[in-house]
Length: 385
Image 1 (cartoon, one colour):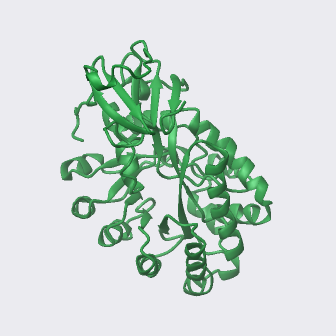
Image 2 (cartoon, rainbow, N blue to C red):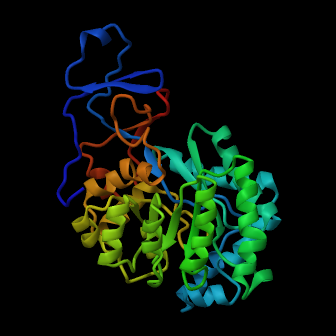
Image 3 (tube, rainbow, N blue to C red):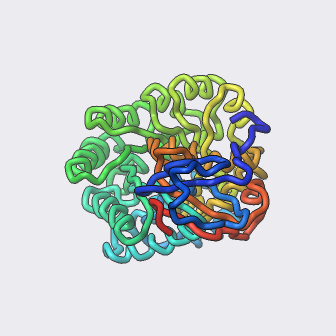
């Protein structure tokens, strides 16, 4: 969407719903729908239900102490190399009972649902052993049975090298990550495969090994790329026609051109940028110039983005990254759905799911404008609500 693009609003419009799907959208009700039950929404704004396309919703413990450490001068890489960061969450997650993982994730999920979310992605990646990675993915599937929300799972075994494999990332991939991916796929637990391509995690060649197995299993891929440095992760994601390349603060013009050619969505994560007090903003103008679809997501995780508000994410995307409010709304609806490969949602179009959010606002720009305020009137999920 170019800068200044509109919202595609229908003024005083009508949405007809049947069988959990949108049947009609327009200004005047056709005769065939005249006898259907009707509800006057009294001028409220109706949008697609929101989509959070990048979360690490399931984890044990918290990292409030590291938050304090950062404010006392420690950097992200320093914390990670000292045994903190992802590794500390791995320890807490491995020791957490299954039900505790589900219950704590439900609290975070409820916050997203309470702001109109109907589709949420959930990653593994805090187990880094077969047993815990599988437990995390099973917990993610459980969330969808406990709440009226759709969950898409991403296997993130290539998130970090666990302590027991320190200095041996190749062995970790061979002995843990790739066998776990195959086991998770056999159990029907994986919708996509992710990785962390960064100096403190895995290089492009190592991620390519994971992606090769994903393609063998006919699973789509996505990638944490160019967050802290430029290692070539974005180009790698484009080469594998990834659903998304996420973070991408250090992506360049060639990367944007590659994303445009591959149809890969750029997922911007302002919560991590804010929490880590980064200064390298993603190349929004370059992405616009190449016509790359941009999504926004919370990146909800215990270390770098303890954020469970898509509304605040929209505001951050505008104030920190320079998105327009229209781009922000597209970023948590149609583009976020595309980043998950979910073409049946994210827009209010006949034939798509009737996952809708009804807002007490006068203009759609208010959704990105307000801070710490939730104007959701009601959420409709699959035509009900």
